[in-house]
Image 1 (tube, chains in turn yellow, green):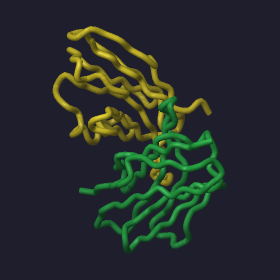
Image 2: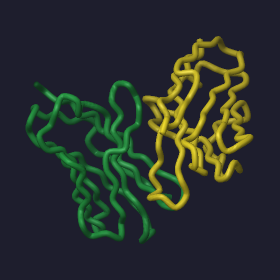
Image 3: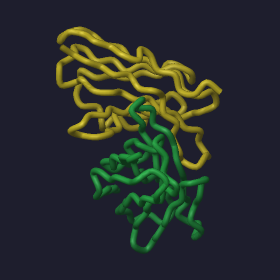
Image 4: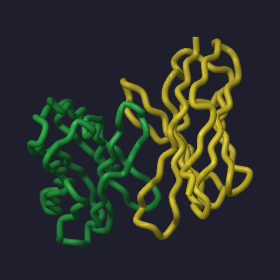
Length: 114
Length: 112
């Protein structure tokens, strides 16, 4: 089992540019979560999907952020246009429904917006 | 809304000794799960231990054990025989339904 895969691991971009973060959940997991981690705010849930359908996006900070899950094995988080305050580590996690509610995390993407 | 509080921003322990990290939570649910996650400098979030709220017996995983006090809504993590590799951020998390709520974390330092 390869675990949750995220790409890229590091991203440095300039303010105003579009950023796309990618996630492949563990095979057989049907819930997927996007988190953001910063020193100031800790670990925040941005959005989660069940069976590829967005269930709760109340954590998405503003319209510049969007997330998609076109199929069970792939999800993207897009920021357009990016701003310096978006600099953070973004985690993707997945979970198998009916399990103990535990989530398995990817290695994260460290985003720096200059 | 559920909240999770870790009152110790930093803790320090001597190698081979025992340390306890505290966590309290607030909920009106009766059926839920509690977790401790470890985040080393690599930043990977690693599940350390899990506790089902309906179980009275405290969970253990090798050197890691919990003290679950449901009435007090307390869920502490005990690390025995601390090792240098235990140095990390530790996050307590509450889970009910699909979502997890995380505490602010405790940074554990291990002194050789």
